[in-house]
Length: 280
Image (cartoon, helix red, strand yellow):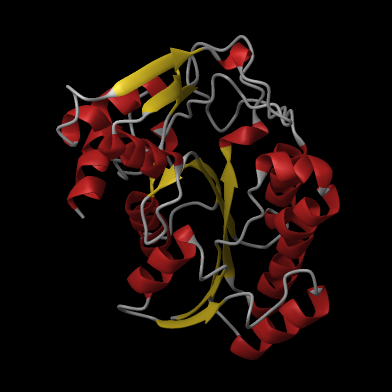
């Protein structure tokens, strides 16, 4: 199968290219090959590839920066997706697009969000990603996969990586004790994506996160155990309300992956994902 990976140099993109290239003809598209802000160029490059599958791993994910640069956020997270959907329509390709938990407001919530829950983003970033979901869905066959707090891959810049680095240095680490989440290990996200495509699962919206609900304090405590730093860990629990951020974040942002499970795609538990990531 001819596969085009857009955003191939990113955290998710690199692992995606590596996995799909094992059995398919992959064209990896980075910023050097195509400018996502140039819709005509993006469509021209993809039309030349004539992909059967388009995997969009590109995103503008500077949450606070999007508040100051909304056009940049919407260009990458929404308008570029419209171009990908247009190519998919012309070539008959399947489109896979990755979104985020930030499409939810996280207010008055005690149970993980399902795909049928109403999206109410509180930030420019979240809004741009929601519009991107809508535009991706205009492709004849599209999978929109919401991921959350991605970690893994070759880049070590995720929140999990920062916690590990702080634990190794014995630094005081301020961690949210009341921000609920379901993190996503990149390797598991790519595996689940492959399963959806290989089994020809129904197209649509899926929450692609590891199983189990946690918060950042509990996650940091688990990292301290796994890295053997429980005695030297200096974790400082803080409430979300005590930190002033330019863009609003959903305080409760856990996602349910029950829809994937119903298809036989069992996402590993988040503690297991952390163990495998640290072992890698």
